[in-house]
Amino acid sequence: MSKVFIALQTNDDTRQIIQAILADNPHAVCNEQPAMVKIDAEGSLVVRRSTIEELIGRDFDLQELHINLISLTGNVDETDDELTLSWNA
Amino acid sequence: MDMKVGKKKLGLKEKYQHMTRGLGWETTYQSMDDVFPFVKYEGIKIHDWDKWEDPFRLTMDAYWKYQAEKERKLYAIIDAYAQNNGHLNVTDARYINAIKLFLNGISPLEYMAHRGFAMTGRQFPGVGARVACLMQSLDEIRHAQTQIHSLSNYNKYYNGFHEYRHMLERVWYLSVPRSFFDDAVTAGPFEFMVAIGFSFEYVLTNLLFVPFVSGAAYNGDMGTMTFGFSAQSDEARHMTLGLEVIKFVLEQDPDNLPIVQQWIDKWTWRGYRVLTLVGMMMDYMLPKRIMSWKEAWEVYFEENGGALFKDLARYGIRPPKWLDQIEKDKDHISHQAWATFYNYAAACNFHTWIPTDDELDWLSQKYPNSFDKYYRPRLEHWREEAKKGNRFYNKTLPMLCQTCQIPMIFTEPGDPTQICYREVDYKDNKYHFCSDGCKEIFEHEPEKYIQAWLPVHQIYQGNCFEEGVDPTAEGFDPLSAVLDYYHLAQGRDNLDFEGSEDQKNFEMWRGMATKNA
Ligand SMILES: [Fe+2]
Ligand SMILES: [Fe+2]
Image (tube, rainbow over all chains, first blue to last red; front, side, top):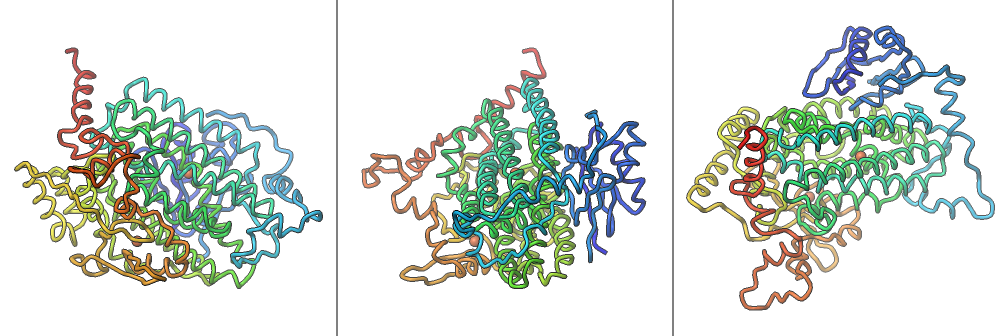
């Protein structure tokens, strides 16, 4: 299985987002690097709006992710509720 | 950020559909071929532009909202960095030279990327593709401008940042990144998308922006971290666009496969050659190192690129050519590049140096198969010579590769003691190449590459002296005439870091920042 990843800046906005991603993807591994985190996951990774909203206590638009996003890999599929990264092979 | 999220009337997918479909039409006063003159000549066949998908489904309203927020954050940090003399918090002044390389060599490419995506968007008959190109074109002009603002901060204090536009068109090593992008924007629209959107953005820019910019943060450079990550936050979108282009084109017609494969081979190799500069920056120019070039290559190219090409295998795409050589090269290219810039420090707008003992040990540890055997003894030899007052400056101009324009510094795959030379006879001339990759790229389009403006050839032909200079005059000094042409001041912008004005100023200013005297 290939790995996908998402990398985010580390700041106050992303603390709960990172927490939410790790909660929704128990197979993911969080890599802390200077000023950023890189979350690696075998096969696929999902970012779920509802989990983020629970943690930040307000409505969240998944497109807000773009502000603190550094990079990602995998085929992207985004709906109002979820952003999924995955490889087909 | 705490943005208000309103109740949505349309879902993301529906909204994207409404904003990017049915907006174009078949022209009748002029033929479609006349309106979109470049869309067919590359041989790519598209049957249904509506199959184009932007997975982020971004529309302009969301685009402005998030880009505005990014700009606000970026300029708040850049202002704070300037007001607080943040440049004095970097690890040491040698570090600034990595930023000279970045802002002089890479940032002007952002502007060319802006032009490239604007031109490409103009050529595509499909609305979805045009909207995606439009956004990337706007992103790229933003990157160019934020980086020019950042450059102006450093330029107030350090040498080598003045006249970056002038230098881009003249200074020998800057022809490497410049010709790379010129090659891409003078290709057709589909090749440009594969070259920049896919091969550069998807396969290679992670190496530039992620570990290097994280390294800038690690070295206390908030300015670079901020413009770097702000640009990179658009990059995730660009990468996704690059991947979508490949999938879209391959799904449209089976005849597209061999054309796309040849572009992937060519542009991965071209981009890989340009990244030699980044390898050197990571291994030699960051006083506090975050990861070696080789490690970054393994994570971002071998692991991610490997997964990507495995995924694309279902379309018949195979991994790019010359990977076996690239695999062997990762132990060598950063050292070979640094040695070259050490040699030619008299003709550069940044400084070079011999790493400290600690740094040499770090390199030995990160490169157990190559550094002690091939590169450390040479650096130590140069250090001894410099101590005796013989700092080595090479005054002989190197032969350049006709394709990548890098001096012939790379070694034979599998034999690091032998420089790799390839040549091709074409019409009445002999052309020289650094590798099988560059040679094959030339052979595919010789009429394009024979036009290359090679800095060394131009110097020898007498085209790199200021007007009125007479190279036949008594006591003519070619190097100083070339420096005049580059607008570089001898002894200030060039030579070793040791003894440089940057070094002295930084020491003095940092002293003023921490003491009252
Ligand atoms: Fe850019
Ligand atoms: Fe080359």
